[in-house]
Image (cartoon, rainbow, N blue to C red; front, side, top):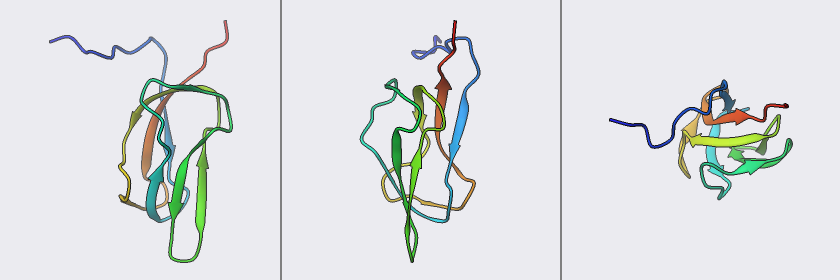
Length: 86
């Protein structure tokens, strides 16, 4: 069976939840490119809301959570392929 989304040949990175709470990812489809600092979503806890953003430019490989999922700090929420400079 052939993988419909083959690995482009470089390492992927995980984006993790910065705090415990309920996830609200942005509406960005997998495969989208984005610059460093782009918002990826929000983790809403009992007292506050923590924004999640991309630490580097890259491609969203896969969402690992859905709207309303409960996460703990450090849980993975997305997988990214970082941009590789030539």
